[in-house]
Length: 76
Image (cartoon, rainbow, N blue to C red; front, side, top):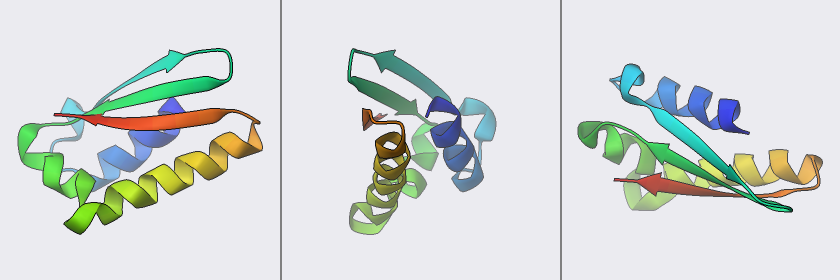
């Protein structure tokens, strides 16, 4: 899941070298923290959060296939 989010985020931003993804795994749930450059934050979130919602939808679909639950947190 971590690699998937990193790939999507790097494709969206102007400074892909500043994309950092951390994964905190629990028994059934994993929290994925995404950190990008301050000027790229708007590109990852999108208008009214549509891009962030789309990324979360992809993450949910991929993690459901693995029978796990994943949560995406975008860190400022």
